[in-house]
Amino acid sequence: MKDRFALLLSGLVAAVLSWASWHWWGQDGTMMVMAVLLLACAVDNGMLRRQVRYLLAERDRSEKKGALRHLMGSLVALREKKGRD
Image 1 (cartoon, rainbow, N blue to C red):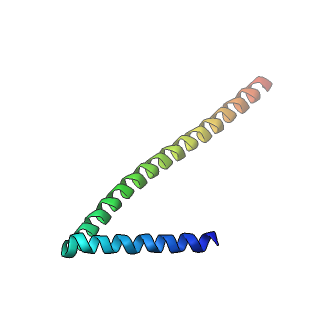
Image 2 (cartoon, rainbow, N blue to C red; image 1 turned 180 degrees about the vertical axis):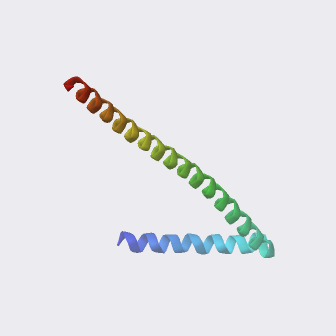
Image 3 (cartoon, helix red, strand yellow; image 1 turned 90 degrees about the vertical axis):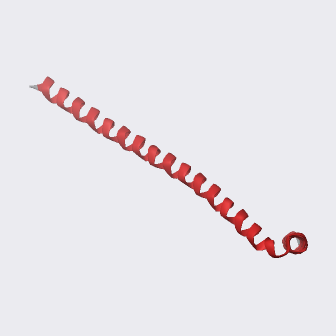
């Protein structure tokens, strides 16, 4: 029941917004919608770029940490081997 009401409400909101945009903006409404969509795409692109940059940095930190662990393990093994000799 809630889903049906939410769907009906969102349809009603979309209908009112489309009527209002056509009523007040007329032929210029298409350009307004395109400008808003272009701005939304630019903002979304910026957010995605920031997220990708963060994920790449996180991956690099993880790889460095793994390499450091491997190096420390090798050094400990070498020290133990040297201690036995």
